[in-house]
Image (cartoon, rainbow, N blue to C red; front, top):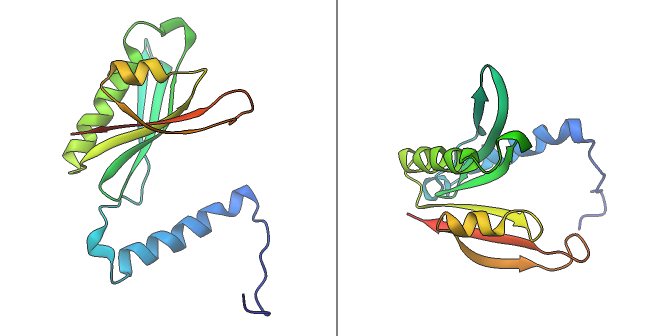
Length: 141
């Protein structure tokens, strides 16, 4: 590394600067044609009687749709809300010409849920957090 360069921790409120620089490189770079990249997050909100009871945040990157966050309020869990949100995300992914969708969860959270939706496990990160695994799933269209 160049002796004039230094690495510093960036405050969370400044992280957007970094992601904008990376997006600019991907969009303007010589390899941009190889990326199906949406620079904006995609959000879905599940509402009941005007109150948000669930939601999903994802993004398109390199021809795949990534589910970053999926949450459903306890009072509506088990009623198909998560299934509906993932179904809508899959529809959006297809509309954006993605070849599949992927997600990660924890061994104590929702592996069975994603398996029931036709996802396949493709990796595990052990002890993340200690005593549990982070589990990675994909579903190709």
